[in-house]
Length: 419
Image 1: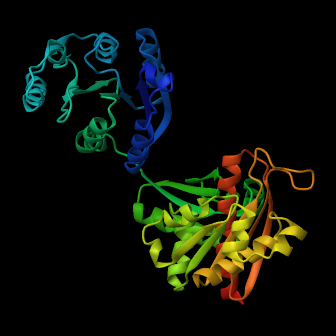
Image 2 (image 1 turned 90 degrees about the horizontal axis):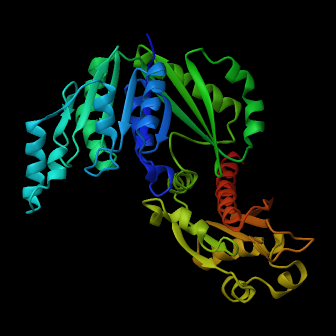
Image 3 (image 1 turned 180 degrees about the vertical axis):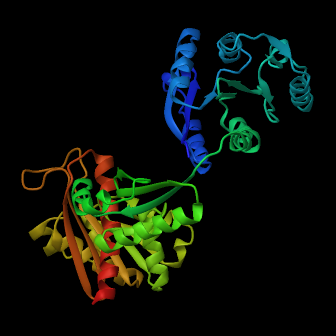
């Protein structure tokens, strides 16, 4: 079955100036994938007629579907409708149902319709109008040489309603598309290059209709398997089989199947085992606690946190020994171990996790440069500590430390089961 390809064109100087972030394209890409339509390219263009036309000409050489957002407002800088009218060699004509929708919106607001807004009801004669039930800019559907062009407003909630209720069903009926299914395998604690080496043989032997993508982030590497075929049930089974193979190859690094963040996976582990946790944080300043409590239902396992930024707080609130701080310093294995163990005692929890380090940009020394960070996890009378040398900017050091700490919790809990 032929792959149906789409391109997305977003129009507006505000996108190029960085004044508005394009969230439309990501949403459309996800929805099109569900229909088995593959997005080939996403392009943002200025409010310039020549630029828009050249982009349309390029897109039609590559794609079956060209989806356009933006430039349908009532002001002079909104050129999309005028350009499309010229591009398809047609003329504008009043579309009475669109005028009725626009008039109803103004009546609801108890204001008179403006002439500029009335002009929005004039649409290219060769298009199929697409109703905009909640805005003043109707959409337009064009067909030419087997290609489909769809123009929609750039306002996200207007575009999404139009796509969901009208355009996606129409595209599904117009094109016979294959099934496309994604499976996401979440890994952490292993670098992308090392991961690629570990799974090279498995990746090489994937069937031709199943592709693998590496999606690295601060928390780890997401592996996305994308399968394409005619039968969804068969394809789903094939993907599940490949996931099972992968789970045997790198079992210690996979923390979830599906779009689940690491902190949610930790929460599931804690809830399943009826365990509680508390944090003692210095360099992360509460960010680790924020990650853990960002998950709904975290009150079932999260008890509390001490942000022991100053050494006096470490001593007073966490009973870290003065001798430990004097002999080893705040950024040390000895200190972070005491923090993790004592926060368990303070909150009467099963698990305690602690962080202490130099997030930067200042505070580093030749012996302990910026990015030197210790994390520790205490559980069942045992404490595991880990040294990090990340040496990035302050924000990244804090975020990365929290991810390492979360993974240390995961590894500690899993190791306790294996013992």
